[in-house]
Length: 409
Image (cartoon, rainbow, N blue to C red; front, side):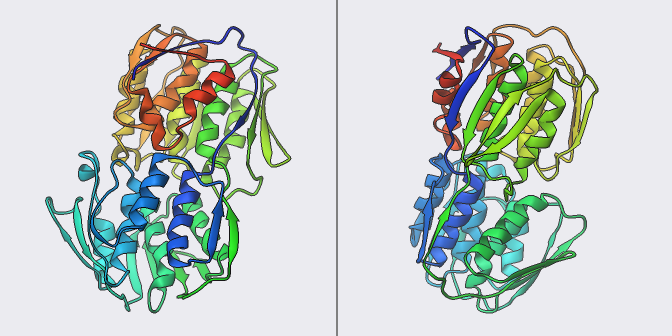
């Protein structure tokens, strides 16, 4: 499906949006629920990734296809490896077969896991024969995707002797690690994060408990972008969000002040209000703790004619697509001047925005959603718009509630 997007009748936006649970929290809690049957979860994400995770956890033998879901691939690798009697081949899309898994596989093998590669060494698909893992000490590079680290931490309570995980080097994506540990703490698992070492105790059972998933801050980023690109006085209410969020992307509340957007926390939600014109200074950000919002920030800056320099993005080339290369290509289509390295993106201030260009999405949900707010400034096409279902199936419906016009082309 290709959508043509155009601006609402008025760029003075007033809207209320209900956003479902965080994909990141949902997939972590689904794995913990598989380990501790007494847990109940409310406000689950309705994303494709969450459904893939749920389906995968329900399989004991055979092939498990995670499609494009990187989180599910990594979390399920540790889960199946540590569950005695489970025999699976874990596979995914063509792009998934290009995304490295060897760091996690090697760590699990060090713990005694039985895993082999079906096609290419170091990449999915992988064959896993689940067994009881009694070793409890392992090391990982600290600057890798936090999903590898969280995968081990989430499975750790089911290991016979728990886990002592040593992280080598400078740790990135700390908020995602802390999210995982926070959720483990919520279900009664004892954890300790000190320096570069994380300890997780073994635990065989948990008390019955209801856990409520907070709404997704990554999803909120697109509404921050809309608020920034809208007229002064625009207000958007979003639910359900917490001031003391476990999600690293909650840093949006600070970042978008640069664009004149103020965040107010209220009754189980937030209100975004455009209260000032944006700061004209080039925005310099280190985003290693929140790389998923880099695309949104870059598009916001471009839409406002501002420059930005975003670094700490070394995990983006191994996402659903090479997000740095994709952003450079698509931003330049609409008139931007962009420079990238293997871990940064720099955008020059600009004036002209080219109209009605076709934005490729590269099987990447965040490409579609990051560019959508630009429709407040110019008409554009979003190719393969349905890709948003990976994390946010209601995205286009909610864009219509905002007033954005979308017509199938």
